[in-house]
Amino acid sequence: MSDTISHPVFAINHIAAPNMTPAEFFQLAKSLGLSDVEIRNDLGGNAIVDGTPAAEVRAMAESAGVRIATINALQRFNQWTPEREREAIELADYARDVGASALVLVPVNDGSGQTDGERQANLRTALTALKPILEQRGLMGFVEPLGFEICSLRSKREAVEAIEAVGGRDRFKLVHDTFHHHLAGEPELFPAMTGMVHISGVADPDLAVGEMRDPHRVLVDADDRLGNVRQMRELIDQGYTGLFSFEPFAREVQELENPSEALASSMDTIKAGLV
Image (cartoon, rainbow, N blue to C red; front, side, top):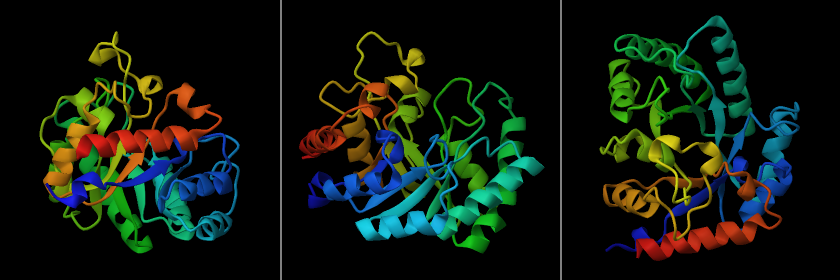
């Protein structure tokens, strides 16, 4: 087995330590030996929400010696409206100015827009409109299917087909989220079309798959039920060379006094499993 298997390239999403300021979060990443981070636009009282100029956040990241891989995320991207267009332009401008490489695109997740034909058409409309917005700013768009049964985009294959239909292979990639991949039950992987992998675990033994929700998502440990290590190994074996970014939503993780120790332990668990 190749050396690459035991040395995945990790990153962290700000949701792993949402109470940290951007500067503290960037230092956390650096202390863990990481070079890449994801910042978010849904953390109250924190950049981007508090209005911190992109240039300031970019300077903080550069000072810490880390790269901003993505801004997470343009929500409800596949419900394209004039309001969504304004949001997309504003967020894409910020992503460009902060030095991010990509904008994560999250679909409608409230039970609407799910009917066959409607959801595919909505997705193509949104990708067609987003393509020039991203191109003009030198950004990639990372489409993230969600595994929840109420989501309007659960299938990675459907996302890939839409990307190809709008001629967007050079502008759009997938987010493979290990949690959502498990929930969706779609076996196929698309490593060549994957731009980012989000990793988190579920350890609660009493949860049915259909009951799993974001608050159950902890750091990957020996009790992980989602098959993170297996998913990662398959992606790497099939040629994926990108980032594996920690994205835990569980409050017990987010409120840790020493997230560095817990993240380092999870990295060690994953590396040991990949050998």
